[in-house]
Amino acid sequence: MWSVRVNGQLAVGRLGARSDADLAWETELLVHLDREGLTVPVPIATADGRLFADGLVVMTCLDGGPPETPDDWRRVAGALRELHRLTQGWRVRPVSWWWPGLAS
Image (cartoon, one colour):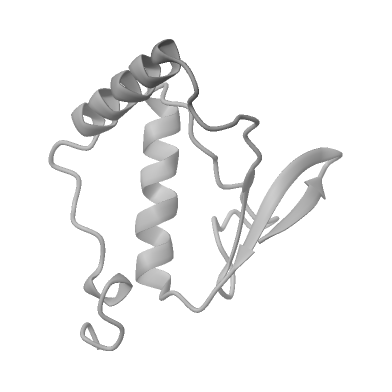
């Protein structure tokens, strides 16, 4: 993971060996959650509109820290409830994510 700047804005770049199917699943889910109003890192598209390229995903950077107070934990619980609601029926992540080679 790297801190990068995109058009002057702080962003996060992540390079890995995950499959295109896995990265497509992840980036599409993040876009969906953002459109529904959940605070998530949003993939930043390449100049030609792709949400990842050659294993690289660049996303918006979110400020924050770990929950510390009971109110913080209530917000975490609320965000998890919302996440579960928004992902009802969302397709399962590709198998290769948790068992490399199994999906090939």
